[in-house]
Structures are given as C-alpha cells and as structure tokens.
Image (cartoon, rainbow, N blue to C red; front, side, top):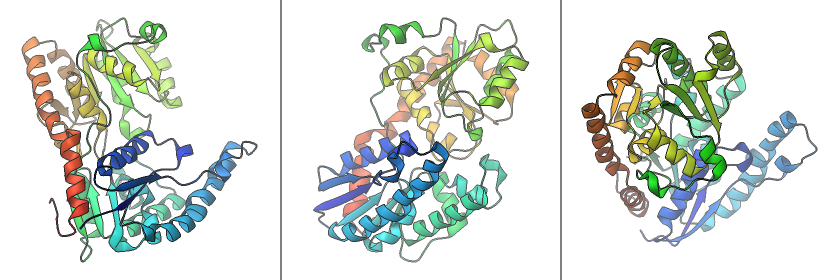
Length: 376
C-alpha cells in the first residue's frame, strides 16, 4: 500500500513528557523516507496564558488537548493516508480519525491496570484518572492497528482488552532515541558539567521520582552496603521527592547521595560510562529506555525481574526482586569482579543490537506499508 502522506501525532509540549516527545520525533524520522511526514502536537493556546495560576492552567489545558485539537484532527486527518498516534495516552484521538488509517503505539498499560485495582504497578488512579484510562483503553480498541514496545505490554493488552476483531498488532520495541557512546574520550563536557561529576565510585539511577521507579530501594541499598562502602548513589533526572528527602535526613545519607536534575545528553552519557552500575529497581515498566542506554555505554545493569525489564535487558543484566535489597547489594559487590563485569558488559553490547534504529525503522515502515502484515 503506497503512502504519500503520514501524520504523526505527538504530545502536548507543556506536559513535559520528554520520552514521548523523543519517540514522536523518532517515528517521524522513520517514516520520512517513504512518505511526506508531518509531526503535529496539540496546539498550546489556553496552556500558554501565563497569568493563570499553575494548577488552573493544568486543568484548563484540557481545552487545548480534548476540545480544540480533536476538532482540528477530525477535519485534517482525512487528508492523510496514515495517522500514527505516538503515545497511547493520546489514544482517544483515534475517535477523531478514520479507524482504518489509525495506528497507535502502546508503551505500557500500567495506569490502566492501576485503575482496575492492580497495586503491583505502584501507580495511583483517582476517580478522574480511572475515567481517563477507560477512554484510553477505548481508543486503543478503536484503532485498526496497534504496536507495542514490549511483549509484556502486549500480554497486558490481551489480558485486559482481548483481541478486537480485525485489529492488527505488532510488537516493535523502542530503539535508542539518541547516540550513546562507550568511548569516554569522545564526550566533551562544559567546565560546569565537569565539576559536578561524582568524585566517589557511584551507582547510577536514571529517570523520574515516580513511586514505581523505586528510588527508595537505592537509598536502602546504601544502608545495606554499610558506612564503609565507597559507593554513593547518583540520581539523574528529577529532583528527590519530599519522602525520599526525609528518608535521607533520617538516616544521615546526605553525603552519600547526589542529585543531577535534567542532565544534558553528554553528561548523562558520561555518567553511564563512569558508573559502577546502572540501578534499575522499578516495580513495573512498559519498556525501560535506561536499560539499553546503559548497555550502549558499557555500563553493567542491575535491575528488577518484573514486567518487561528482563525482556529488554536480556542477558546483559543481573536481576532481583524490587524489594530484595540484600540481593541488589550482593550484585553491587559482585561487579567488583573484573571477569563478571567484563562478561556483563559484553552481553550488554550484544543485547543492544536488537534495538538498532535501522532495524526498528524497517519494522515500523513494513507494518505501516503492508496492511496484511503482522510481526507477531
């Protein structure tokens, strides 16, 4: 099926969902060689009224996302051969598109599971949030085609929604969304960035402060390792939550924790290379980009054995239950063995070949161009 025009629907910029913003740009790049591609995001009108209180602006932004943009999309989507909604959180936009032209990428169903009472996701669902998750699930069921970033996420969909008649599905994992290097000599930092590199051996956690990321395990890990341990924990991403700050004060851990908020790509790359290991103790994930980023940089990975994480990290990681602090500590010490460390890094380099952008690009374009193809 030749495609001349493809519309990629990204995320509302004020929501600051950086990973989804990057993914939408990746999709547009993937499709660019085979069609005329336009990347569009919900327009920011109400959300840019600076005189409004932040909380009020947050709720009024739904006018942009759920009224103004759907009207535009309902009119304009019919002039495109394919509409690819890059984030399942925007799946209600499927009701604004001809269903046979619509593809949605589903990154996880953790919030949907939480809204149905599943506490293992470590997500919370308010009554309003539960309604939104029902809309998201309805949008996913309406689209003619769905892609899933992991088999674990696809399995969640089958359990929750079944397999709608005639709907096409494919498991197409995320690719690396930027170039990550393993040669530290090729990475240049500003003097300011150079000055904040940790002076002590460190264990790295990358990501948000969302409870499901399980930052508390990293703090308990410091206690398990003991005061004589040389390791500190570096959190790269969001600031610490108030609860974690209180825990640090209560247990006198301030000197053993460093927080680097929103590091540049170059700084993050260098942190991966220099780290003793990436710590990834999440309770639940739909994919887990830091896993393959760390492996691309030659960093060993210690991760949870839950949801999609073993599927993504492959044999380039050591796995433990996300509540098993003692095993995580054992792994930290075991990676001081050069042979184990070297083997894990080698396995990580082998694993990330599965996520080469050219392979993922080929999978997306093949699925979009052939209406009869499924990669399951």
